Image 1 (tube, one colour):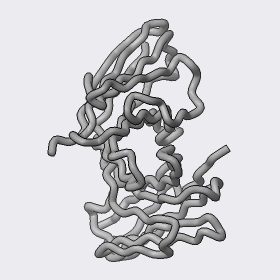
Image 2 (cartoon, chains in turn yellow, orange):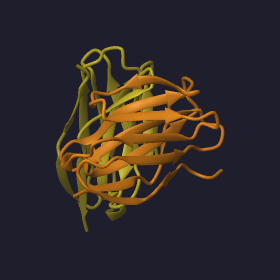
Image 3 (cartoon, helix red, strand yellow):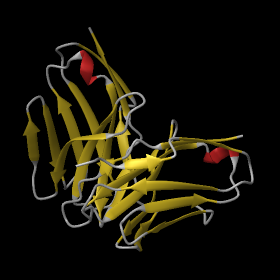
Length: 110
Length: 113
């Protein structure tokens, strides 16, 4: 069935370093790949997304890359700050059915 | 615009009971999706409604059901509650067209004793 694998499950980085989270999806028909950030006790918030006709998208310190052939997509956060500490979820979707990864807990150490 | 709202925010039930959760989408959004969030399983897709019709369904038992009203508000029902149903239930709304972008509500925390 449809599946999204997300790695790593936890990630600790020093403030100012970069963080990379990787996801692999199984449904080759997936055409939309959002990333959500969820802070403790809060709702998931969309931080960046990419569509299947684009290979890379950047928004300030955040970027997402997509490799459709390998069915991989990754989130890159540069110059990490303490407020980036949260759980990050990737998702793959087609026809409005979102399949989420299991999440990555990112800790930015000051 | 007001965001997605969910009621109630917290619920405590006992095994065997049933529960109904409500979700009001952002004004103009016609799609509502429901998710179950647990620490070990992440976000699991339950179902998605658009214009009062269920368009997609996840792999949950028939005890989980939903519906959508003409004003796009949606309800989710869980019958014969089990301990394993304890979770945060999130709904998300979107326009429902090709834009895909979903906005989440704050969730309903269900505890089954």
